[in-house]
Image (cartoon, rainbow, N blue to C red; front, side, top):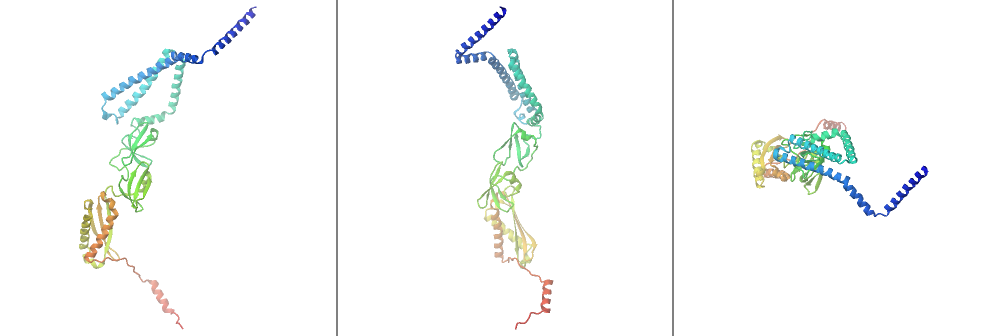
Amino acid sequence: WEQREKDTLQELEVNRFQLASLLGENTNWLQTTKDAVTDFLRGRGLTLLLALSAALGVWLVMRGLFWLYTKKLTKPSARRQSTRYRLIVFSFRALTMLVMTMSVLIVLYVAGDLLLLVLLVLILIGIGFSFKSLLPRYLAEGRLLLNIGPVREGERLLYNDIPWQVKTINMYSVLRNPELEGILRIPLTELIDLHSRPCGNEPWFPSRVDDYLLLPDGSFAQVLRQTPETVVLKTTGGMQVQYPSAAFIQLSARNLSLEGFGVAVSFGIDYRHQAISLEQVPQTFQQALQAALEREQLADHVLSVLVDFKEAAASSLDYLIFVSLRGEAAAQYFAIQRLVQKTCVAVCNREGWGIPFAQLTVHQGDGFERLAITKTEYPAPESS
């Protein structure tokens, strides 16, 4: 009978379970969801809310202390470049994260929610292991953020073959070239392998907007736009040409507007005027050139006018004419060359000086003598 009693009790338990299941199916699903949410909010949800509130409270307190330090205890001029200030800032941030984490752990421990406590500890352990493998990179980035690494704020570095000034170092650092439009924003990891140096009074780019250039192929161009990617030039015929900024630096174009330029012309007169070639001719040319430049309203841009005897060439007495001008007159580079030639021709016409032209001189050598002897020994046959 004892075995029969045990079987009966088991059957009774099964019937009770089936009855409870049937009653649960008849329950409203909305009410079931509401009860589950209520139980979560009263239990684990409240614990999470308290943990987040504790972390937020710690963050606000630490933020207030940091504000008090920056506003009351430090000068604004010492905040940007000071390594000590940067070290304090990042140490304070690390301390804030540590205290916030400890506050969350304490709340979970006091609430007795072992599940959330174990999950948080496992997450922290995983972060610790990943941090161990990334430690060398983090140390390098930390030195950069503290402004004690190979790249420092305010210095000059070469990135993509273009010089840049480091404006700020952060998770996304800002680079700027004073002669280019816009800025360059690059991630901190790209600065790890770069090096900067203090910059003095050095040019940041070969040209500026509106400068006039003489390109290696002899063409004349004006700079319309300069960006970190491209340089746009306008040539003499009005056609626009684009160069990659890095390639433009390697182009080695002559900037006529930067620090002034010079126009060199070689001009020759006939040997008949040899007697006056060393004094009167250079003085006359120089006076005429100065007057011509003044008539063209270029006198304010002229630094010097040099006319000097260059050489006694094969068929002419040549003079070197060199006009130095400020960069403001660069737009008239070729016009000034033509003006110099035109003025020299006008002086020759006025003074009656001859202008020689290139002559071809034939020298009779041994070959011509041998040809003459051959013709003597073997005369041409007489015509019948």
